[in-house]
Image (tube, rainbow, N blue to C red; front, side):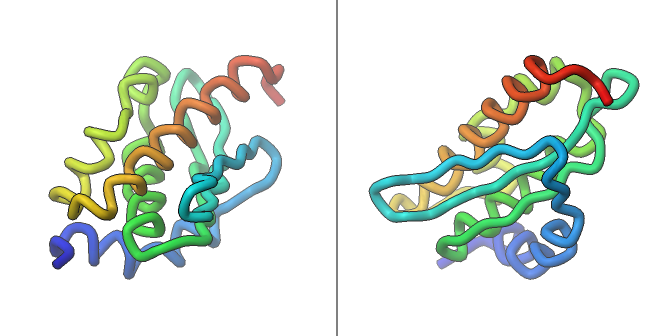
Length: 123
C-alpha cells in the first residue's frame, strides 16, 4: 500500500523527532483528521538548519514530516520556499488518495515555519 520511500521515512522519524527544538517552532493541524505537525528549525548563513519535527497522526503524516525535515534541512531560503505538497509527495514516491492530506499538512508546516523565521529576528 505504501511505497518503500514512505516506509523508510516513517521508520526514521524518531531520529528527526529527537532534533525538535522549540526555539523556532510552529504547529499546523488538519482539523478533519486531527493530525498535528510541529516543525522547528533555524536560519543560519542563508540555509535552514537543525530542522526537526514531531507528528501526531497516521503513518503517512509521520512519514511526510520526516520527508519534509529532510527536504528543508540545509535548503536555501528559495529552495525551502518551493517545497509544496507535490514535493513532499514526490519524496515519498507517491501517496494513496486517502493519504494525500499528509503532504498538504507538511507543506502547510513548511510555509508556516518560513513565515515565522521571516518575522523572527535572528538569534
